[in-house]
Image (tube, rainbow, N blue to C red):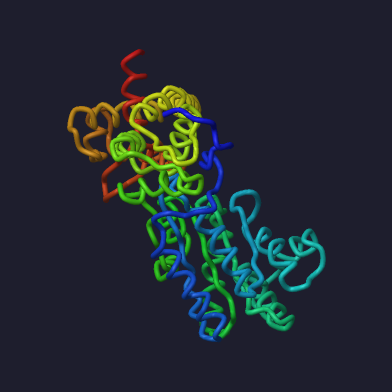
Length: 369
């Protein structure tokens, strides 16, 4: 396809996207919960959006924060793992309850003698919500991103504080939404068994129809379309992984010099794949470089097993046999790879790669060694 370029690509690789595709049910459920809170009927059942890296969990939280503010809620955002979770909550909530400067609130978050950290967190939530409604707001909505990075003690205090509020302040206008890797379910429930009662929604890769929409919708704003065979190839290459769809879309857009009214063809996709494949390879190379020797051994064994079996996942006991070690000896390495978002456990005792194409990359690297 030829023509005069319409301008900058409408795709957003490496950035949160304003248009969220394929997450309507999760967003609708969260928005209904906010409506109940605003109407004075809160349930305070924290909702967790969990899934592999890059599937749009943070984008979902950002969209919900915008919705909450439109509904007259005061919002607080925490990027877990940057500090003690209790201190982070105190700093994030200080503007919401009209308290002193965040640093002072953070200092106040430490528990004094005879006082549990869970009650400290409970009091933070209660004072913030009451101050917000006193100022005319609908309540407070708290967002916690990368919750799997939060410290164990802070997570336990956070979960117990929710339990305390449910029993002591059931009408508190407070909502909590969190996002993290799939391993966050185990992380949270391990330190706070009560957290099993929270709401957990798995954010998976996009199906083919929604993956096509990721490519079609941004282009449509410029009156540019995609041919069916171009879409088929792009979706097959990206595997329903939103960052790769946006990256390929941008490279195709650049290669095609899209003009309004034009249609992106399969030839355009193949032209754009040159830069896309190079960028994806660099990304995979960075992931591989950051892996320890033990992690590389497990990644290599996983890639080999997948190539032999043709299945999407492998049993951990089979990996252990291939590595001539006990299954229990893989536990620490397995968890580190899960924490990094490189692998996941789609079923008990099983392991799979999270990034489309990474298995082939690892298999190729191992073959070159």
